[in-house]
Length: 469
Ligand code: GLU
Image (cartoon, rainbow, N blue to C red; front, side, top):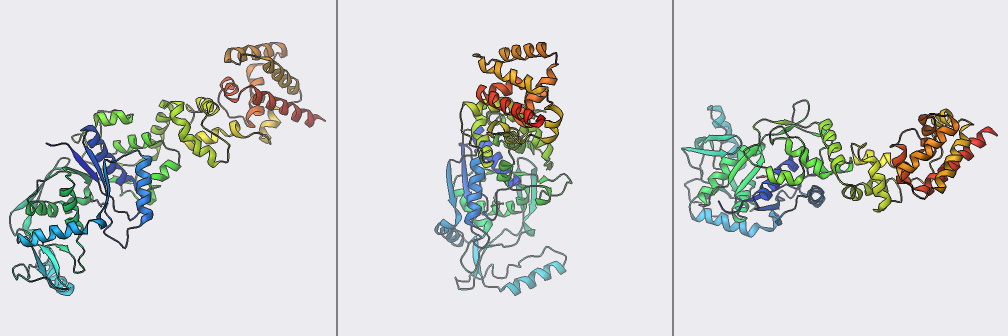
């Protein structure tokens, strides 16, 4: 086969949802794996439901997921001349015809067919009338009356459709606009698409499309229909199951690589491996290992996988990703060494970037006061003023702030005061963070840096003294 060309053709009638993103991902991965091309096409012929906001949302989501395309974006609304040309081809070859039956007449035919126990369909009344073009005429495809059309699905196996069940479907409405199945085929042929992976909600369209390919004497692409993504209650994934929009997961603090890792596992497997880097996915993805059964979207699994990706990511990768979350909290954060130090202490403790930004509060708040009332009451005992003051003095004179040196200072203090490590560490933690929850004391002191640590210890001393007076 020539080089693989796949496509993702969303209809811009809403945001990019989980199922759509998985389809995009499978096509992108397959193209990348085969060093082929990935085409983005916006199917915006439904001008009533299509919006620019949805187009923008789709681009934004694709960019977040880092699913780059080699050609496009193409917009179907800009391709009407091409569709007209292909309609004419089918009219010329006798594979399409004008039909002037009114909607009421077609409705009556459908009712009749149904009453006779058949499939509701158009009865072919205008098929051989050779009607000319006219104002209210639609164009219908002349579908074969007998035989079968087989969808050789790489995921589901062969699916056989009886042509006798197929009606002469409309390919161009009376207002001159071509219909969905027709434009998809014209696009896929003219864009050289040879592999089509899409949701199995499109299976019923595929025999119609295959018939069009044949009439246009074009070679068939490989088709694969991926089973649906379900919610935990095994019904089709919907808003009820949580956020549907892909960018909502970005805003919840998921990493794009974690998200695509989770998406790919909704239908594709490689032994029992769960964690994949993007590069590994590109290397290993194939069509043979896409499963036949529907998969279930599970927020807990996604979150656990995100934690694994955060842990595995380097601080320099995480820094620009965390930054917007810190800035959204109003912190004056920039991508610098300080931020990297902060992440160093938090990335093994955070399941999402939102959690990490929350955990970073004391690194970016200039003043950690007011202290958590319960913590202050419990740990800021009058006798701690001296201990914290002494710690501040000793740390201030340290030239080398390595964790080893910090430990030595703490040890010294423990010996002098007879207090255990925890008895000193907890008040220090409250002084430095305002709370009792934080990363390890020494790594936190390292990240905060000497000046902040000393200043905060001194403020705590003042606070304790003021309580006593
Ligand atoms: N525009 C269609 C959709 O968003 C996709 C059609 C296709 O993959 O052939 O569902």
